[in-house]
Image (cartoon, rainbow, N blue to C red):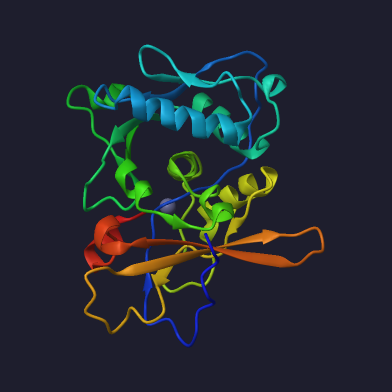
Length: 259
Ligand SMILES: [Zn+2]
């Protein structure tokens, strides 16, 4: 795809985008281990495969996969081939922490813009059980994303899930509304993108595509910028674009919900 033209004039409004990520370290053991990330039974085999593929590419753990119980199995630091060390450290920290994270298919849900994490609640004996979080993934939203290949590689289901995990593990925040930066959570994810040689997300918020503010089009195109640092120390900008009427996130109530 061609790069989109640079934005002209003011952005009419900023809109909170999908949630994406953050971390720092803990020790990473040498052997394969189970994480505290578990698929809900309803998460289809196709989506599990899709998600595992994306996470393998990001982490460099070629053995990473969901087992028959839907538990994410990872590798040790020694078993990594390329990929992002920070991403491996985040998953290792998630494995060593107390919190349980359930992966749920939220495809076609209007209140989920790409992905989001919600605190869960045990129905019985909650006090004796570890904290639980539900990571909602709207796989359908990612199908609506078009744009530069360099930006698409830096924005998919794998990146989104890592972002939500970082919220749980590090309690890191997203950018404040209107802020012109990626926010603490995405800053960690950008470190992972850098380690993978990918473009970094320039801002947390997406904005309306120029000219869309006043139209009565049935589509509401929005866009999100990514920057790739070139060897010449220049930044090259790439864009993602999608129809917010299909993905969601335009209405204020949904902006608040997107974390
Ligand atoms: Zn977030």
